[in-house]
Image 1 (cartoon, helix red, strand yellow):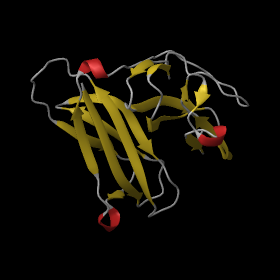
Image 2 (cartoon, helix red, strand yellow; image 1 turned 90 degrees about the vertical axis):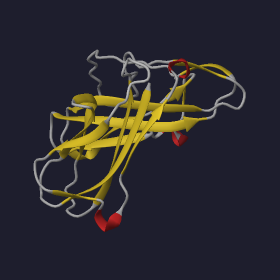
Image 3 (cartoon, helix red, strand yellow; image 1 turned 60 degrees about the horizontal axis):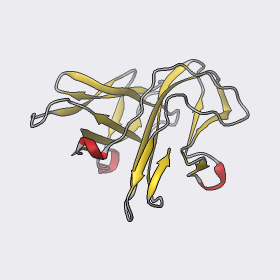
Image 4 (tube, one colour; image 1 turned 30 degrees about the horizontal axis):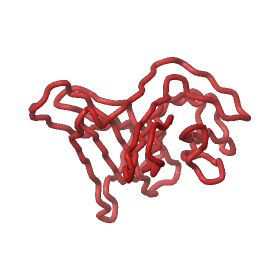
Length: 195
């Protein structure tokens, strides 16, 4: 398996509703579209794009790249800020994944489980767990003051201080489709853990 991590410092140059970024293996799209939005011209935003690719064949030479779909102009690496694409090969036995395409509609006011995204990880003494979660969602609101919050639980307890969430999202456009990313390194006790 190949863990791809891309970080792009992007600045909007025109007033528009975003840029869609995607990762490619050769000529094939891998992972979701990652979209960045801002209505602050010239402000640099980091676009984090993690994806666990499963190319399927061992000892295969792979070429990964980053591509974008524009609705307006932008600038990458303003003020010489570095952008990076990293590919880490990981033996399949060290990786557990959960993926789901099940539609889930949530109502405001309380935390909801995201269906299909539960995973058990068994750790040995001194081992840490890299947890990466990408959720494609559609914002059903368009309000500057409203936020959607995402978090990750280990064994039923949130890994975010104060239970505020690890990622907060907003939407100024109803029915906007986006991808949300949470990534963290956890340091659990040895044994099995449910994330």
